Image 1 (cartoon, helix red, strand yellow):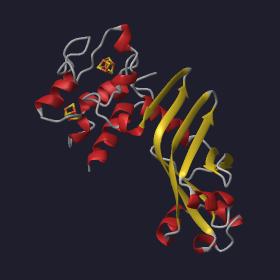
Image 2 (spheres, rainbow, N blue to C red):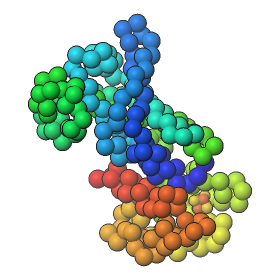
Image 3 (cartoon, rainbow, N blue to C red):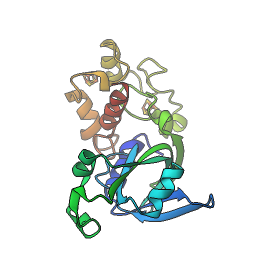
Image 4 (cartoon, rainbow, N blue to C red):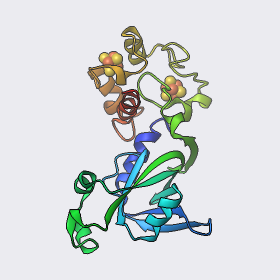
Length: 231
Ligand code: SF4
Ligand code: SF4
């Protein structure tokens, strides 16, 4: 599994028209239905429009445990966490899509219209023929200065790399200028730097055809998530 796994997973869910939502039914069994994600940004959370009278709404009001699954091509992302029902008028208005009108003729203020807000705690992935399982807390543990995810980097084994944090900026290939810059400035990672993405980081992330990020900018996305977690 590659060191860009977070951005790769985000890219996949953004291309998904439909997802599967599993909830716990009245008999304690899992019950899965299809749902349409609204403006998905990342694997941390998901939102779906539904009706206050819908079975999944009633079930989530009794038991918040839920699971969301996305599938695109051969890639699969399954999230496990909790969900809640949101009825705040501002949130409903912000997330409204014109296509909802068929289900909610009263529009944004239709009293039956509500939002399922899902928050992930665990992730199981099958991406590019590799699998991984981890918690969101693990993902949000800073693993490198530049935003690469050393934990899932194949170079850990193939090149016995101990990562830039543990080696104080000297991974298997020698001193890393990004890690050195970050450490010299006293930052734990580049997401703490007001200059992100600087020219140096951009070069590594976007411009290196062989070792750069897939998708481009992946390590910058991860750095920003680490920074957002602290704020
Ligand atoms: S520091 Fe090593 S383990 Fe971490 S991303 Fe770079 S090559 Fe991979
Ligand atoms: S974003 Fe650029 S300037 Fe800022 S710490 Fe990282 S490498 Fe240095």
